[in-house]
Image 1 (cartoon, rainbow, N blue to C red):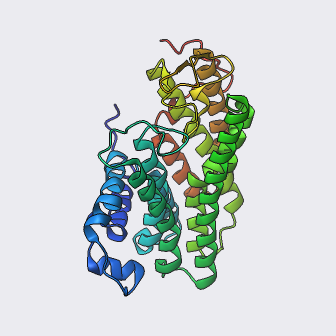
Image 2: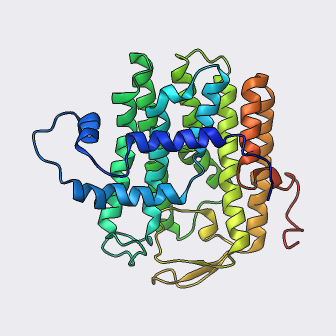
Length: 343
């Protein structure tokens, strides 16, 4: 493990404080008035704690990377602005991401009633409700509390948050429909397209959108920044799955329809168990993992090409950010087919 200081340590801490400012660990009357205004009824604060705050913070504490708000804060700082002045925006980025993780705390299924029991103490319906509330709260934070933005760019950024959320939902629906029809996931090229269209907007593209809104739309390098964000997001997602594949030789399928699909869940070169029964298994061959490692490296190279076209200030932010991602700088070259992956 490297002994070098995390270049984004301060921004990571700032992102955490922003989330806790706008989504506190404990519900209070003051917070409720801040986020929802004066109410005509009495809130059940204990129910809010059990049904939203506690499951949300289990994910928050388990995933301290804060990648999305860190990237946004670093880009904002690179333009000479203070990212701390945009706390609602940074909190919204992380809240939207964490909403997708809340659902990963339990096993997947056709419906909540059919899903296997989860390790979490909360019922599955509570977890789904917590995830939904977190997802809806993120664009609300922008629309109601991003006071540093002018009216037009606040509306635009709220739209971009909502668009990213709907794209992710549409992508998941498309994957599940494909699975129901063919009992397999998308091929490699289609999966990369899926990541580009549906997943990366919730990854790093939205961080670039936050910069554009903060700058009042005056970002000449916006197109190159978005290109770098898309390819960085694809490479990162594939790298994470590749690393996971190298650690785990078997994927246990709790139900034939996964809630968070992945190409590594099952594929054309898999040895597949009984997919019509809970508990079936699929073993993904190492050739598949190696091919995806090569795809990840290729998209890393495309990201680096886009980064090279940026000004030095913004380019340095993306370069340092990319190196800091899990295994991002340790990918094989694009033409490396992974022969040495057992080393």
